[in-house]
Image (cartoon, rainbow over all chains, first blue to last red; front, side, top):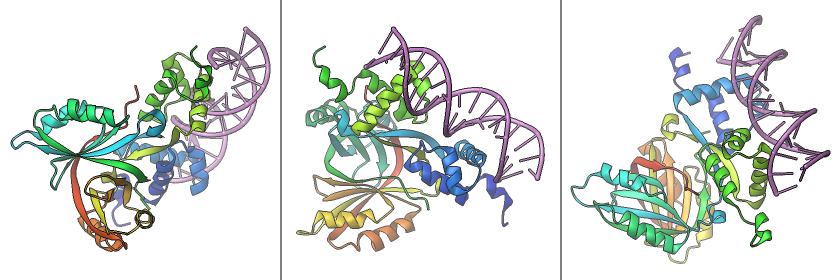
Length: 158
Length: 158
DNA sequence: GTTGAAAAGTGCTGCGA
DNA sequence: TCGCAGCACTTTTCAAC
């Protein structure tokens, strides 16, 4: 063993196996995972608790089909901030726009980059005009509409 | 009652409440949801089964912190396809690139738009040069690197 | 750190209203 | 269609290895 202290700070192959299973289906029973990986249910429990305490696991969520609940439009917004305007202020205002599901501060042409989910085109127009472009410091936005989501998955750990 | 037949085809406020709770934490016990919404546990079960059968619920997943498992770089790629090259062929090849977690066919300057998660900058360079730009039909790509993910959440249903 | 079993809690299935 | 109660299963804990 090169460094004994690593055991509590880093994750091993068993942890990776557990995460890989649960990342695809968070409802998989611990007993089932235990059977598959040939360890006891208690071990899965201990490992999960460790990873939760470490902050590796941030929670779980139900995946729903947005189109089936009336959200047909997925769009990306390139946001240009005015010179001198503060990023933090704009972020706080953007957090209040519920249609924004992701926001990134980024390199390249755009100051910020957002992913938005809307009911239809008129809902998108409302969000853009009334909610986003009304925020002080936001100069203009560029809209990229997704016509089809071909891939939607998690990272592969192993 | 306006239209009795809707009950099996559409979702009501109770369904929305259930989804809202589980979208934030997929491991919430049915009994706990039942207590909160003041209905029986069996009702939650029936509603969940209905929504699963309808395809509204596509599954669940564990949310992990990519940075804590060694994935430090999140980037967006604008992909330009060559004239006449088929979209479907490129998608099939891109599906094999495990670092791509989202792929959209979209309007605007780019033909396609991808979100990639990599370990570090050299990993990103490898993915770009060896895996993505090597795919026939892909002309060039533009990379936007996320320096900070300020918002990451699900859509609000209610 | 892991195991196996016991205790507590949850999910599922009929029956009744 | 909904709610209640019983059974099976799962989670969680703990002593022992």
